Image (cartoon, rainbow, N blue to C red):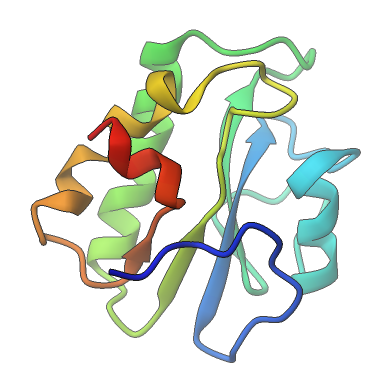
Length: 130
C-alpha cells in the first residue's frame, strides 16, 4: 500500500499536493504555504497548479466544525473520482494548525479504503482510523 510521504519535496507531473486550507485560500502557513511552491494561488479554490486545498479553517482562520470539513472532503472526493489521470497526495489535513487529530479527520476518507479510488494516497496514520 502506498502512503503520502511525510515531507513532500517533489511532485511528478501527474501528482497533486492536497493540503488543508482556509476558506479564503490565504496560504500563510503550514502545508498551505508549501502549496504555493506547486502553484496554489491566493483566493483560488479547487485544482490550482499541482495543488488542491481542502478547507479546514474558515475565512477568519478559525477551525471549521467537522461536518463542514466533511462537506469539503466530499467535494474533493467527487473531483478525484472524475480525474483518474491524477494521483492525489493527501497530507494530514486539519492535523496541524486546525488542531484536529488523525482520528477526527481520517474517517472522512473511509471510502478510499474500499478501493473506490485508486488515485488517492493517504498518510499512513490515517489508515489506523478508517
